[in-house]
Length: 388
Image (cartoon, rainbow, N blue to C red; front, top):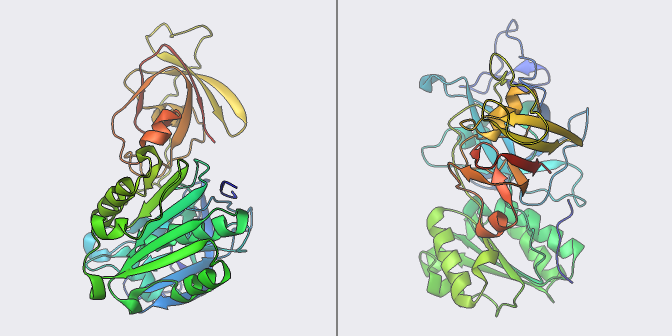
């Protein structure tokens, strides 16, 4: 059986929290309303200490609707910015460790980083009752190629999305799963008890191997290869962790015989802009495209399926698709707008585009027509695109 996955300022009890100290501010300070209709206030209902330098934040779903997600996706949280850096907000993406169908609430797991700000702030200040603004779940680090055997490799906090995928695979299929998890030492293993319980409950098809640098040194491709099973034609590998680890794990999977098109890695990148800022688009929205090809000004014509509606739009040759849609007032999804996160991915049904940057889509996705709206320029006169 193959595996297919299931699919504001911080506030404590209404009080604004000072970004530097984590303490309540003066009573006259007020909480800003939601920065955009696409963001949601999420209340922390529990803070779980996973290790000495990692915590899990459990959020209640927003009152207006549940935020559904697929295992492997992330939340973008609006963390208060560092006053000394001149930034009021520090938007950051955190992978969801909760599993749809198994957990009632959303959960992200955050690990302290040396020299970092947002993760350290959350580890120090997050508490029950605090409210953080979040975008809807996004990202494409999800199982999408129907594997009959699953290889998972994670290092450090890279276990966060992998844990969601692992639990879902065990609950929703009979697919054999191999997990290799690297950490500094035994005390730094996130979800150690939960992983041990899963291995005990599913020992007939789950293998968990811990690679501890204190005992074995830095993970190497050769060392990791020895821990992987003999693959089938439909074995898929999903890798998450620091770049050096993912390089070694990808090489190991290839050496073990996993098809290169079925080796997927999560891309880590810091946001340089503010995805919560309201984008009002250009001063004047471009006109709807005429039927039957390029418009009179040379723009391409694109038929867009988005949120259950179909719209035909004139797409200027020098403007990326995301900006064109936002200018038209269409609620297209996005996060980083830099080609790094996959939050604006769409399926190209007809036509051809040129992507300026692609730091997240792999060959498997590209072969299936997946493109990034924030980086796509039209090359054809007529195109059709679909957003999931």
